[in-house]
Every structure is written in C-alpha cells, then in structure tokens.
Amino acid sequence: MLFSSSIFLFAFLPAVLLGYYVVFRGMRRAQNLLLLAASLFFYAWGEPWFVLVMMGSILANYCFGLWVHAWRRRGRRPALPVTAAVVCNLGLLFVFKYLTFTLENLNLAGLNTPVPVIGLPIGISFFTFQALSYVLDVAMGTAQVQRNPLWLGLYISLFPQLIAGPIVKYSTVADEIEGRRETWADFSSGCCRFIVGLGKKVLLSNQLAVVADAAWDTPIGDLSAALAWLGALCYTLQIYYDFSGYSDMAIGLGKLFGFHFLDNFNYPYLSRSVTEFWRRWHISLSTWFRDYVYIPLGGSRKGPWRTYRNLFVVWLLTGVWHGANWTFLCWGLFYFLLLCLEKLGASGRPIPAPAGWAWTFLMVNFGWVLFRAPSLPAALDYLGAMFSPVRGADLQACYYCEQYAAVILPSILFSFPLGRWLTEKVEVYLGRYAPHVFSLWDMVYGVSLLFLFLASSAFLVKGTYNPFIYFNF
Figure: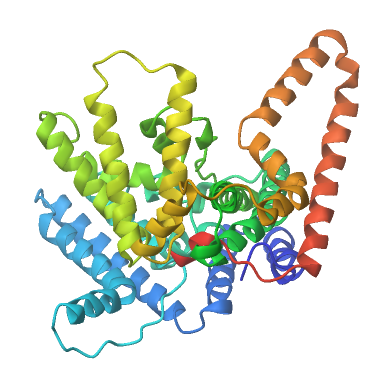
C-alpha cells in the first residue's frame, strides 16, 4: 500500500486513527495491538505471502535478543549470539536479494547451475536492518531486551517506516513503545509534515520522473547532450523529493501516534563536500553503518590505512545494500574513492565554498547516473552522451524545459532551505513589528497546506501508478 494512494489516505489511515483515538483511547496495549495488526495488514496488502518472511524475521530476532541478554547477564561476551544474528539476518537478505544475481554471475564464469526466480519482498533491507539493530543495541547495552514479542514486532513492522525507512534504531524508540505520550502539538505537526511529504512526492517527484524517464528511454544514438544533462538533473531532483517525501510522510505519521523518528534528510544538495553530503542524505543509513560497522572496525582511530580499509568496507556494503547489480556496487565504490580524495586533500588549502558546492553537486549527479542505469555499459553510454562534443541542444530538450519549467524551477529552489529561511524571516519580522498578525500568518500557513493536500489528492485521482524508488531496497 502506498502512502500516496487514495486507499491509504481516505480509508486505511482514517480507520486506524479512529480506532486508535476513539475506540481504544487511553488503552496503550490495545492501541499497540491495533498498530501491529494495521502494520501487518498494510504490508500484506501488496505482499500477502512475504508478510510471513517479516514475521519470521521478527520471531528470530526476538529469540536472538533473549539469547544475547542471557549471555550478558551471566557476564559473558555475546559474540556467538551476535554472530548468529548477523548471519541469520544477512542470510535472509542474501537469499531474497542476492542469490539470483550471484548464481547468474557464477554461470557467466562457467558454472552451470539453475537460477531460481525469487521475488523480492518490498523493503526487506529496511526491516532487516531495523531487526538487526535491536539485537546489536541489546548486545552493546544501549537498549533493554524486549520480552514481549508483540512489542518487538510493532517496532519492526510499524507501518509509517516499514517499507522505505527511515531506518529507526531500536534504542531511538524503545521507550516509546509503551511509554509514549500523544499531544495535539505532535499530531498537528505530524499532519503538516505528512502533507509536505505528500506534495514532494506527488507534485514534484512524479512530474520530474516524466522528464527523467523520457531521457533514459531515448535510444542512446538519439540522445543529445542537452537531453542527457536535463534527464540527469531531473533524476537528481526526482530521487531527492521521492525519498525525502517518503521520509517526511513517515516522520509525520509517526508523530500522529506518538513516535518520534529522527530526520533523514537535511538539504543534501546544499553540501560543499561529499563528506557533508552523506551527513545530510539518508542520514539513518549513514548512521547505521557508522554505529554498527565503521566504529566497531576502528573508525579513523588506528591510522590512515586502517581508516581507508574501514571506509572501503562501509561503502562496499552501502553499494551492495542498495541492490543486486554491479551498478550499485560501483556506485558505492565511487563514493569511497571520492571520500578518499577528500581525506587526502584535507591537509591542503581549503576549497572555496562555491567551487566545493559545484564539485559535489556534479559528482552526485554522476553518481545518480550510475545508480539509475540498468547496467554498467548503459551508465557509460549515458555519461558519454552527456559529454558528446557533437551533440548540442535539441527540440526535445527544449520541449521538456518549456513544459516542465513550472516543476523544475521550484524543485531546484526548494532543494535549498529557501522556505525555512523565508518562514524564519517572516516570523522574526512579525514578532518585532506586528505580533498581532501571527494568527493571520498561521491561517495563511494552514490554508496553504490545505491547498497542497487538495492539489496532491487531485493529482492522485487522475495520475498513474508511480511507486517510491526506495521500495526496491
């Protein structure tokens, strides 16, 4: 089920809110059971059989958590149960996500093995990493063991962040499973955040996808440099508004039920270095690898060569996490090389801010071409078209620029904190010179959100199916 669908907006979500705040008001256990049942139904709506895979993951990690806790209570290092949990969770990922890819490549090397057709459960990488974070948090002592398997199941399957994140560490919401407090401030803030995310997805990302897909669907022999650059730019904006829009909706939905998830994006295209970009983009994934892989390997504390080795491991795993394709692996290693270059040049003269921003944005664009391409040869062909000296502007690129300027230009502007800056300036001005106008300003803001919701709903009614990009991961 999609957040940006009529069935979710006008049937599923209202029904869950009605049950949560009216039928089971003040009954925490009943509310939790309602959210658990709703989350399993939400996942089973599109994946009726794969919900059993997720339930198996919940049960297995519940047992691993008890095993780890038992060893810690006896004063033993829980190396064995942690290893078993890692092998089990990554083994599950391997079977569903990488087994077919591995066998296909082994067959290319001469091994004649039948290749099974295995369906990919939506969001398996997200809920597997969340389940594993529970076991690791218990092992590191940053969270208490959860003795109620239903509450652990609620954490792993909670529908706001189930399919495409953000990846919520268990220690972040452990206390809120039973001890959260719902407030009107959180509820209203959550509604606003959800509407903004919905607008990002429906009004911006889905429209940018039309231009990006047109460029990628053009035969490489007919692809002009202008259309190739336009397609790369639109995909760069599309994936940002697609994924950050989902994260906004997930964070907003969490607040409706008293859960507080950490921000997953912080204007990443404002970055002046690749290092800064990955502190602003998909923050939950970067934090997960930092806390559970990079730091346990030694981080940057044991000399430069160990640092580079640790970076290599993290970015190899980051690339592999995104999918079973050589393009994702090379995408991860591409960022490893960029980060190494930045570390090597850190002792030299600092790069001027405009040059740093231009370099970072250009590299990120190239990275998204590799990420979007179906194969490495296709990525190289597309990059070649972008830099072909004999290809200039064409009518097709001009057509898309003219037809979608009303989408592309706002998308560029709002990828920077322009809205936040204007809001702060207006509030400072009103607070200083016209405090009595604040109620009018709040009304304007509310009406704007209502218009945004109605416009998004109208596009959904007449639009086509366009799932979130990160559903594939």
